[in-house]
Length: 155
Length: 133
Image (cartoon, rainbow over all chains, first blue to last red; front, top):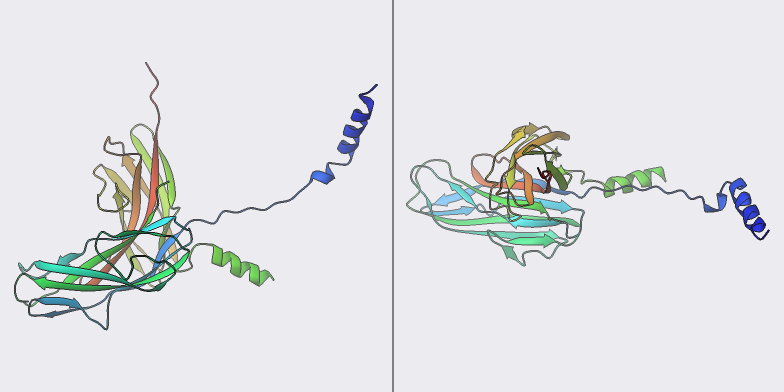
């Protein structure tokens, strides 16, 4: 007999269609993304044994990401391509952050530096090359290729 | 109101410009000694650009993966505002740790102060345990 009120309550809930417990939700997942944009190649100035980036036309790029601490930014090794048997005797590469939302690399970065992008948003970087040749410059095409990589952090 | 929602959704999604790959985290299982991953490379740089697929064994992107892999395509052009699927097959190798990084790198012009930009996704591997005989 004591079970009767409980049975009535359960039946009432069933007939009510459980309306009191109904809820609607909508979810989605935003993909974690890192992208480079506004990348421009620069020009080099060669004089004697010195090779530098043209101050008025430095390589530049913008990195944008939407996942706090989801990506690391690395500065890769610079690779020269010079005419004849010329090689790079010395080199220095400064990567300068000119604006952005992450306090990465301090004022400048160098080859091999890695930093985690803690903040969502965009950061703009300029590349400044200074190198010396193994001998005086000869006629030909001079290239110094530098690298910047946005790497998904390993879980 | 609808315009505001569309604007917010666009803002929350992938960046509307640049070159990138998606997803950033991949999982793969070795079956019969091979594992396959696929990702989408996109180009919204504002101009056509050439890209190359690379695999690295470390997150500093200093050690190219020493084992065998094939990427289809391995080097490709993307028109502006376009994307394509890239499939990478990696052969099982004891030198593989449990993770690798697959990347697309821009191919810069061949003169001047060139800049290569690269975006890498993390791949975590799982191995099927062989049944005891």
